[in-house]
Length: 163
Image (cartoon, rainbow, N blue to C red; front, side):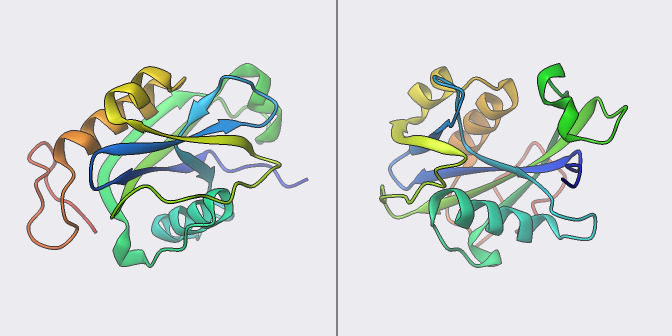
């Protein structure tokens, strides 16, 4: 098995009405999260990793232009029970935040080896259900500043908003 890279993407999937999609991890009952995943190789562009993970975990296809990159990253300690999946000595991961706004709730096709259930929830309920502090924070930010992908960026808290 190839060690995972400690660089990942988090994709907050939300509907125009403000609902957020959460996925329950396989083998971890009660552990709810947005779409997440590590880069497949060091040269994989972040937006391509986000597109790939979105398709693999939900069946939702997207073009790069459909994804909004928030220029928001989190560095966090990898839980000890998951460190064996990385190179020895790797203790931290850097996560890059993306979002995609859909016109409404859509059915998803889960990857059964990764997730066992999905829920669409109002964003505040989604925040309360997520196990990860980075995911909770990203949902709050996306919900507050999300809007159409075209036009000027409403991300006043960052220097620029790459889309």
